[in-house]
Structures are given as C-alpha cells and as structure tokens.
Image (tube, rainbow, N blue to C red; front, side, top):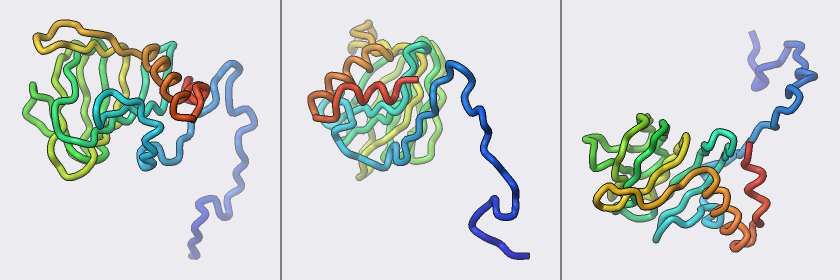
Length: 178
C-alpha cells in the first residue's frame, strides 16, 4: 500500500457543475481570519480594543467578528436578546457575572436574555475571541440601563467609515456581506 499527500489520488472525482442554487451568494473564504493582525481591519471600539468583522448578514441582523483587546480591563457591559457563540483564540477574558475564565480554545454559548460585563484578564498576550452574534447587542451603563445599540447595520456603517479612513476603501465591507 502506498500513500500520497493527495487524498484524491486514484479516485475519479469531478467538481459539481451547479455549485450554487439560483440567487445564492458565493461562499466567503478568508484564509487567515485571525492570524493577520493588520490593525487597519479592526474597527476601533475604545483604546486598544477593536472589532474585525469577517461575515455580516443584514437579512439575519447577525455577524461574525474577531474582538481584539491589547490590555487587561473592563471592555463593555451589554445585554443581548438573541444567542451569541464565542471561541477564545488568544489571551483570556471573563464575565463578572460568571465564575469561568475563557482561555484559548474555550467555547462560549451565551443564552438569549443575558446581561454581562466583559473583562479582559492579564495574560501577557493580546486577547482575541471570535464571536458569532445574532441580533443586536444593547450597551448598558453602570446601572444596567440601555445606553446604545450595536447591530449588523451599525457595524456596516462603522466599518465603511473606518475602512475608508484607513485606506482600505468603504466597499471592502461589501465583500463580507452575505
């Protein structure tokens, strides 16, 4: 028995002729979504904190982004009426309201109807977490009162403005919309 690096070696396989159904959007492929830390792709959310959108769905009011924080500290308080999924890539963080700490490889499912306070832990490395957010995030003040809304539409607006300002071009956002 011989082995090769090609898993199709010796197998007759042809690609599908009709990949997309009529009206379907093409796939989105970003080869180094979190490994490339070009700061221009991170929309500033505060000092040393940014969001890099990698998929945006206005029709679902949902998005996937990489949240990046350079320093330890309180990042934000928010409430979400829909579920959120997270995967910690580097660094560590937690919610003041829970007893766990997210470290590289940690998966987080946030239930709809949850409010929490995101705090980045001191870990000696930049915190990066990929979040899949469904529906809006409602920013909260220190007393838990609504202080603003962030959704796919505000993200698109912020991204267009930021990418135009840093020389990437506002139309880059269109490549992320599905």
